[in-house]
Image (tube, rainbow, N blue to C red; front, side, top):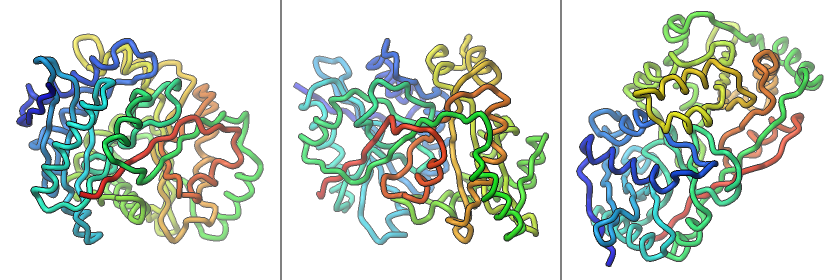
Amino acid sequence: MIEIKPLAPTKGNVKKFVKFERDLYRGNRYYVPPLLSSELDNLLPERNPAFEFCEAEYFMAYRDGEPVGRIVVMINRQINEIYGQNIARFGWIDFIDDPEVAAALLRKAEDWARQRGMKKLVGPLGFTDMDREGTLVEGFDELSTMATIYNHPYYEKHIRAAGYEKDSDWMEFLMEVPEGIPDKYNRVADIVKQRFGLKVVKYTSRKHVKEDYGHALFRLINEAYKDLYQYSPLTERQIDKYINDYLGLLNLDLLTLIVDRDRKLVGVGVALPSMSRALQKSHGKMFPFGWYHLLKGLKGVNDRVDLLLVAVAPYYQNKGVNALLFQDLIPQFIKYGYKYAESNPELESNAKVQSQWEFFSRRQHRRRRSFFKDL
């Protein structure tokens, strides 16, 4: 018999919730555990500013007293108000290879959503787009990334068996870092700089980046992503948190800021050395010795770099501004010895984003999917 129990969002319970995923994938060579501190920051309401406009419930599935699955069901009131919808989300869903377990977890999430007047359940999604999202449906033999979900191949089958249909897909690409900047990028970048008066600015001080462009960077993300699938705009409190949590970790050589004549930020590219192997070796923990592997991942030799995000102000989209990003980043990738660059998830329908890779040797190596069910 399968029993579904709610978990109060205490630190001890959240650690149990996180541990289930790690135990399920123990020994899997492609799975990359999320950093435990990041999971606690996401799932503990007192640490996550998204709970100002989200409500959520955590559930664990048990059989004979042993955990066999988990799920979060949530409502993002902000995005429901923006789109005039009554949609609940599910995320952080993991389960053993048993369709009954998957169905029981999803039924519990559906019941919770119906009780709150929701008409549809969609997922896997997070509280906002800064969280990991999408069930992996292709690329199970590819090393995962810090920013993405890894799951077993049976997930899609069991979710569909519970009555869910495809809602949206994301594709991911692995690019080969070229030996030099492609001529096309140089030509386009030079034209764009001359035509629009744009330029790349670089920093050697993280403190100065925060002061000059910290808030502007995340506001630009809101502006650039506002029309994308289920995008939830970041609030000022969320922006403050991300500035404090992440900007201090960046290698400033891998941060590209594009400004106009008035030094207003109009484009940004953020890359980070792949942390996949470091997170595997540290088991997603800083202590007692995980910090060593994580620091080595940030500072040591690495042949892969993650393109965490690219954002361009709507007015400048489709005008070649991305060429400036790569004119700046490619020499840095070469300098650090990166051979491959991960695109991270891009919406299947976002042809504008996918077109920016056309001058790279690349392959689509992963695909992930969100599902929906009318309630």
